[in-house]
Image (cartoon, rainbow, N blue to C red; front, top):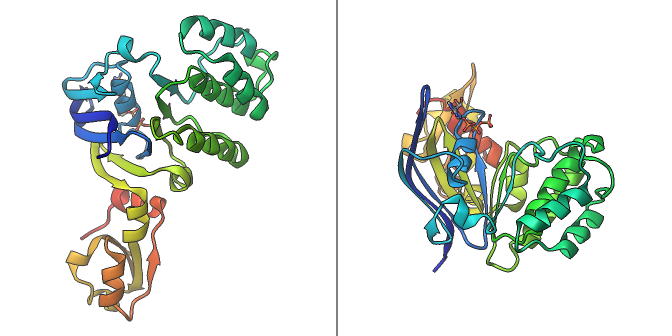
Length: 285
Ligand SMILES: Nc1ncnc2c1ncn2[C@@H]1O[C@H](COP(=O)(O)OP(=O)(O)OP(=O)(O)O)[C@@H](O)[C@H]1O
Protein backbone atom coordinates (compact mmCIF):
# COMPACT_ATOMS: atom_id res chain seq x y z
CA UNK A 1 0.00 0.00 0.00
CA UNK A 2 1.18 3.50 -0.83
CA UNK A 3 2.46 5.51 2.15
CA UNK A 4 1.80 9.22 2.45
CA UNK A 5 4.43 11.82 3.29
CA UNK A 6 1.86 14.59 3.71
CA UNK A 7 -1.79 14.20 4.65
CA UNK A 8 -4.06 17.26 4.59
CA UNK A 9 -7.46 16.46 6.04
CA UNK A 10 -10.50 18.76 6.12
CA UNK A 11 -8.34 21.82 6.53
CA UNK A 12 -10.08 25.16 6.86
CA UNK A 13 -8.57 28.62 7.10
CA UNK A 14 -10.60 31.78 7.00
CA UNK A 15 -9.35 35.26 6.11
CA UNK A 16 -11.59 38.33 5.79
CA UNK A 17 -12.41 37.75 2.15
CA UNK A 18 -11.15 34.23 1.48
CA UNK A 19 -11.68 30.78 2.88
CA UNK A 20 -9.75 27.60 2.38
CA UNK A 21 -12.72 25.33 2.60
CA UNK A 22 -12.33 21.85 4.12
CA UNK A 23 -9.54 20.82 1.78
CA UNK A 24 -8.13 17.30 1.82
CA UNK A 25 -5.37 15.70 -0.23
CA UNK A 26 -2.25 13.58 0.16
CA UNK A 27 1.31 13.63 -1.09
CA UNK A 28 2.26 9.96 -1.51
CA UNK A 29 5.80 8.96 -0.60
CA UNK A 30 8.05 8.58 -3.64
CA UNK A 31 5.85 10.80 -5.79
CA UNK A 32 5.78 14.30 -7.25
CA UNK A 33 2.53 16.21 -6.74
CA UNK A 34 1.82 19.31 -8.82
CA UNK A 35 -0.42 21.88 -7.17
CA UNK A 36 -2.18 24.16 -9.66
CA UNK A 37 -4.78 26.90 -9.57
CA UNK A 38 -5.19 30.49 -10.66
CA UNK A 39 -3.83 33.50 -8.73
CA UNK A 40 -5.47 33.73 -5.34
CA UNK A 41 -6.85 30.18 -5.42
CA UNK A 42 -5.22 29.29 -2.09
CA UNK A 43 -1.97 27.50 -3.03
CA UNK A 44 0.41 29.57 -0.90
CA UNK A 45 -2.02 29.56 2.01
CA UNK A 46 -2.17 25.76 1.85
CA UNK A 47 1.63 25.50 1.67
CA UNK A 48 2.06 27.92 4.59
CA UNK A 49 -0.38 25.85 6.65
CA UNK A 50 1.54 22.65 5.83
CA UNK A 51 4.76 24.39 6.88
CA UNK A 52 3.16 25.55 10.14
CA UNK A 53 3.75 29.18 9.17
CA UNK A 54 0.02 29.78 9.46
CA UNK A 55 -2.32 28.25 12.03
CA UNK A 56 -5.29 26.32 10.71
CA UNK A 57 -8.82 27.01 11.95
CA UNK A 58 -9.93 23.39 11.62
CA UNK A 59 -8.74 20.08 10.25
CA UNK A 60 -5.45 18.27 10.49
CA UNK A 61 -2.12 18.12 8.69
CA UNK A 62 0.30 15.23 9.19
CA UNK A 63 3.83 15.03 7.89
CA UNK A 64 5.64 11.70 7.86
CA UNK A 65 2.99 10.39 10.23
CA UNK A 66 3.42 13.17 12.81
CA UNK A 67 1.75 16.51 13.43
CA UNK A 68 3.07 19.33 11.26
CA UNK A 69 4.75 21.34 14.06
CA UNK A 70 7.67 23.14 12.42
CA UNK A 71 10.11 22.13 15.18
CA UNK A 72 9.47 18.45 14.35
CA UNK A 73 10.18 18.79 10.66
CA UNK A 74 12.95 21.34 10.14
CA UNK A 75 15.38 18.71 8.84
CA UNK A 76 12.68 16.71 7.02
CA UNK A 77 11.44 19.41 4.68
CA UNK A 78 13.33 21.45 2.09
CA UNK A 79 11.40 24.59 1.23
CA UNK A 80 11.72 26.97 -1.70
CA UNK A 81 9.56 30.06 -2.17
CA UNK A 82 9.26 32.22 -5.26
CA UNK A 83 11.79 34.68 -3.87
CA UNK A 84 15.35 34.12 -2.74
CA UNK A 85 15.35 34.76 1.01
CA UNK A 86 19.13 35.13 1.44
CA UNK A 87 20.75 38.47 2.29
CA UNK A 88 22.17 40.21 -0.77
CA UNK A 89 25.66 40.86 0.66
CA UNK A 90 26.34 37.17 1.33
CA UNK A 91 27.73 34.78 -1.27
CA UNK A 92 26.83 31.11 -1.76
CA UNK A 93 29.85 29.97 0.28
CA UNK A 94 28.76 32.11 3.26
CA UNK A 95 25.22 30.77 2.98
CA UNK A 96 26.40 27.15 2.88
CA UNK A 97 28.53 27.82 5.97
CA UNK A 98 25.57 29.29 7.86
CA UNK A 99 23.23 26.47 6.82
CA UNK A 100 25.78 23.79 7.74
CA UNK A 101 25.57 25.11 11.31
CA UNK A 102 21.82 25.18 11.21
CA UNK A 103 21.08 21.70 9.77
CA UNK A 104 22.51 18.54 11.35
CA UNK A 105 22.04 16.79 8.02
CA UNK A 106 23.77 19.43 5.85
CA UNK A 107 25.90 17.76 3.15
CA UNK A 108 28.64 20.14 1.91
CA UNK A 109 29.81 17.74 -0.82
CA UNK A 110 26.30 17.48 -2.21
CA UNK A 111 25.98 21.29 -2.09
CA UNK A 112 29.24 21.73 -4.05
CA UNK A 113 28.22 19.05 -6.55
CA UNK A 114 24.89 20.77 -7.29
CA UNK A 115 26.58 24.20 -7.50
CA UNK A 116 28.97 22.88 -10.14
CA UNK A 117 26.27 20.99 -12.00
CA UNK A 118 23.86 23.92 -12.13
CA UNK A 119 26.68 26.38 -12.78
CA UNK A 120 26.02 28.74 -9.87
CA UNK A 121 29.04 30.85 -8.80
CA UNK A 122 30.22 30.27 -5.22
CA UNK A 123 31.90 33.61 -4.67
CA UNK A 124 29.52 36.17 -6.19
CA UNK A 125 27.28 37.99 -3.72
CA UNK A 126 23.56 37.21 -3.91
CA UNK A 127 22.91 40.78 -5.04
CA UNK A 128 25.02 40.11 -8.14
CA UNK A 129 23.31 36.85 -9.11
CA UNK A 130 20.67 36.68 -11.84
CA UNK A 131 17.12 35.71 -10.87
CA UNK A 132 17.67 32.23 -12.30
CA UNK A 133 20.91 31.75 -10.34
CA UNK A 134 19.24 32.88 -7.10
CA UNK A 135 16.41 30.40 -7.64
CA UNK A 136 18.87 27.62 -8.44
CA UNK A 137 20.81 28.46 -5.28
CA UNK A 138 17.61 28.35 -3.20
CA UNK A 139 16.73 24.94 -4.62
CA UNK A 140 20.28 23.64 -4.07
CA UNK A 141 20.19 24.82 -0.43
CA UNK A 142 16.82 23.11 0.11
CA UNK A 143 18.21 19.85 -1.25
CA UNK A 144 21.61 19.97 0.46
CA UNK A 145 20.30 19.28 3.94
CA UNK A 146 18.98 16.01 2.55
CA UNK A 147 15.28 16.46 3.36
CA UNK A 148 12.68 13.73 2.89
CA UNK A 149 10.18 16.15 1.37
CA UNK A 150 10.67 19.09 -0.94
CA UNK A 151 7.98 21.80 -0.99
CA UNK A 152 8.20 24.52 -3.60
CA UNK A 153 5.86 27.48 -3.99
CA UNK A 154 6.15 28.89 -7.51
CA UNK A 155 9.88 28.27 -7.38
CA UNK A 156 10.34 27.63 -11.08
CA UNK A 157 8.20 30.53 -12.30
CA UNK A 158 10.41 33.09 -14.01
CA UNK A 159 13.10 30.59 -14.94
CA UNK A 160 13.89 29.96 -18.58
CA UNK A 161 12.96 26.59 -20.12
CA UNK A 162 16.56 25.32 -20.09
CA UNK A 163 17.04 26.01 -16.38
CA UNK A 164 13.58 24.63 -15.58
CA UNK A 165 14.44 21.46 -17.43
CA UNK A 166 17.65 21.04 -15.39
CA UNK A 167 15.65 21.55 -12.21
CA UNK A 168 12.93 19.11 -13.24
CA UNK A 169 15.66 16.51 -13.84
CA UNK A 170 16.90 17.09 -10.30
CA UNK A 171 13.33 16.65 -8.99
CA UNK A 172 13.11 13.31 -10.80
CA UNK A 173 16.46 12.18 -9.35
CA UNK A 174 15.37 13.30 -5.88
CA UNK A 175 12.38 10.95 -5.82
CA UNK A 176 14.27 7.99 -7.31
CA UNK A 177 14.89 6.32 -3.97
CA UNK A 178 11.11 6.02 -3.41
CA UNK A 179 11.38 7.65 0.04
CA UNK A 180 11.38 11.28 -1.02
CA UNK A 181 8.39 13.30 -2.17
CA UNK A 182 7.76 16.67 -3.76
CA UNK A 183 4.82 19.06 -3.54
CA UNK A 184 5.20 21.97 -5.94
CA UNK A 185 2.86 24.73 -6.90
CA UNK A 186 3.28 26.30 -10.30
CA UNK A 187 1.52 28.14 -13.06
CA UNK A 188 3.61 26.31 -15.63
CA UNK A 189 1.41 23.35 -16.39
CA UNK A 190 3.91 21.94 -18.91
CA UNK A 191 6.30 21.32 -15.98
CA UNK A 192 3.54 19.36 -14.25
CA UNK A 193 2.90 17.47 -17.46
CA UNK A 194 6.62 16.53 -17.57
CA UNK A 195 7.28 15.36 -14.02
CA UNK A 196 4.23 15.15 -11.75
CA UNK A 197 2.70 11.83 -10.75
CA UNK A 198 -0.39 13.47 -9.27
CA UNK A 199 -2.12 16.78 -9.97
CA UNK A 200 -4.23 18.75 -7.52
CA UNK A 201 -6.37 21.62 -8.81
CA UNK A 202 -7.53 24.21 -6.30
CA UNK A 203 -10.08 26.91 -7.12
CA UNK A 204 -11.57 29.54 -4.79
CA UNK A 205 -10.22 27.67 -1.76
CA UNK A 206 -11.71 24.31 -2.75
CA UNK A 207 -10.02 21.24 -4.19
CA UNK A 208 -11.58 20.59 -7.59
CA UNK A 209 -9.69 17.37 -8.24
CA UNK A 210 -6.75 15.30 -7.06
CA UNK A 211 -5.86 12.80 -9.76
CA UNK A 212 -3.05 10.76 -11.22
CA UNK A 213 -1.53 12.77 -14.05
CA UNK A 214 -1.59 9.79 -16.40
CA UNK A 215 -5.30 9.29 -15.71
CA UNK A 216 -5.98 12.95 -16.49
CA UNK A 217 -4.10 12.76 -19.77
CA UNK A 218 -5.58 9.38 -20.69
CA UNK A 219 -9.19 9.99 -19.67
CA UNK A 220 -9.91 13.61 -20.50
CA UNK A 221 -10.50 14.90 -24.00
CA UNK A 222 -12.07 17.77 -25.87
CA UNK A 223 -14.90 17.54 -28.38
CA UNK A 224 -14.88 20.43 -30.83
CA UNK A 225 -17.95 20.45 -33.04
CA UNK A 226 -20.75 22.50 -34.60
CA UNK A 227 -23.69 23.47 -32.41
CA UNK A 228 -25.96 21.20 -34.41
CA UNK A 229 -23.64 18.22 -33.79
CA UNK A 230 -23.36 19.02 -30.10
CA UNK A 231 -27.06 18.27 -29.62
CA UNK A 232 -26.18 14.58 -29.96
CA UNK A 233 -23.80 14.66 -26.95
CA UNK A 234 -25.38 13.55 -23.69
CA UNK A 235 -24.79 15.88 -20.68
CA UNK A 236 -23.62 12.78 -18.77
CA UNK A 237 -20.64 12.54 -21.09
CA UNK A 238 -19.07 15.95 -20.55
CA UNK A 239 -17.86 18.05 -17.64
CA UNK A 240 -18.58 21.48 -19.07
CA UNK A 241 -18.70 23.24 -22.41
CA UNK A 242 -17.98 26.57 -24.03
CA UNK A 243 -19.90 27.96 -26.95
CA UNK A 244 -18.91 30.46 -29.59
CA UNK A 245 -21.23 31.72 -32.33
CA UNK A 246 -21.07 28.58 -34.41
CA UNK A 247 -19.12 25.96 -32.54
CA UNK A 248 -18.92 24.24 -29.19
CA UNK A 249 -15.95 22.91 -27.22
CA UNK A 250 -16.59 20.54 -24.37
CA UNK A 251 -14.39 18.74 -21.87
CA UNK A 252 -15.12 15.05 -21.57
CA UNK A 253 -13.89 12.76 -18.81
CA UNK A 254 -13.97 9.42 -20.62
CA UNK A 255 -12.28 9.83 -23.97
CA UNK A 256 -12.31 6.13 -24.83
CA UNK A 257 -16.06 5.73 -24.24
CA UNK A 258 -16.81 8.98 -26.07
CA UNK A 259 -14.80 7.88 -29.11
CA UNK A 260 -16.93 4.74 -29.29
CA UNK A 261 -20.20 6.58 -28.73
CA UNK A 262 -19.61 9.60 -30.99
CA UNK A 263 -17.81 8.12 -33.95
CA UNK A 264 -18.62 11.09 -36.20
CA UNK A 265 -17.14 13.71 -33.85
CA UNK A 266 -13.49 14.68 -33.57
CA UNK A 267 -12.16 14.16 -30.04
CA UNK A 268 -8.82 15.79 -29.24
CA UNK A 269 -6.47 15.07 -26.35
CA UNK A 270 -6.67 17.54 -23.45
CA UNK A 271 -3.51 18.97 -21.84
CA UNK A 272 -3.37 19.73 -18.12
CA UNK A 273 -3.73 23.40 -19.06
CA UNK A 274 -6.89 22.66 -21.10
CA UNK A 275 -8.39 20.70 -18.21
CA UNK A 276 -7.54 23.45 -15.71
CA UNK A 277 -9.00 26.19 -17.94
CA UNK A 278 -12.22 24.27 -18.51
CA UNK A 279 -12.71 23.68 -14.80
CA UNK A 280 -11.85 27.25 -13.82
CA UNK A 281 -13.45 29.21 -16.61
CA UNK A 282 -16.26 26.76 -16.45
CA UNK A 283 -18.79 27.19 -19.12
CA UNK A 284 -22.14 25.59 -18.96
CA UNK A 285 -23.38 22.09 -18.53
N1 LIG B 1 -2.35 36.64 5.74
C1 LIG B 1 -3.44 36.87 5.00
N2 LIG B 1 -4.43 37.66 5.44
C2 LIG B 1 -5.54 37.88 4.70
N3 LIG B 1 -5.77 37.33 3.48
C3 LIG B 1 -4.81 36.53 3.01
C4 LIG B 1 -3.60 36.25 3.72
N4 LIG B 1 -2.84 35.41 2.97
C5 LIG B 1 -3.54 35.18 1.83
N5 LIG B 1 -4.71 35.85 1.86
C6 LIG B 1 -5.76 35.81 0.81
O1 LIG B 1 -6.05 34.45 0.53
C7 LIG B 1 -6.32 34.28 -0.85
C8 LIG B 1 -5.47 33.15 -1.37
O2 LIG B 1 -4.12 33.59 -1.47
P1 LIG B 1 -2.92 32.60 -1.81
O3 LIG B 1 -1.67 33.42 -1.73
O4 LIG B 1 -3.03 31.39 -0.99
O5 LIG B 1 -3.25 32.22 -3.34
P2 LIG B 1 -2.31 31.53 -4.41
O6 LIG B 1 -3.12 30.44 -5.03
O7 LIG B 1 -1.00 31.14 -3.82
O8 LIG B 1 -2.11 32.68 -5.47
P3 LIG B 1 -0.83 33.08 -6.38
O9 LIG B 1 -0.80 32.07 -7.48
O10 LIG B 1 -1.20 34.45 -6.86
O11 LIG B 1 0.38 33.06 -5.51
C9 LIG B 1 -6.11 35.62 -1.51
O12 LIG B 1 -7.36 36.23 -1.66
C10 LIG B 1 -5.28 36.38 -0.51
O13 LIG B 1 -5.52 37.75 -0.58
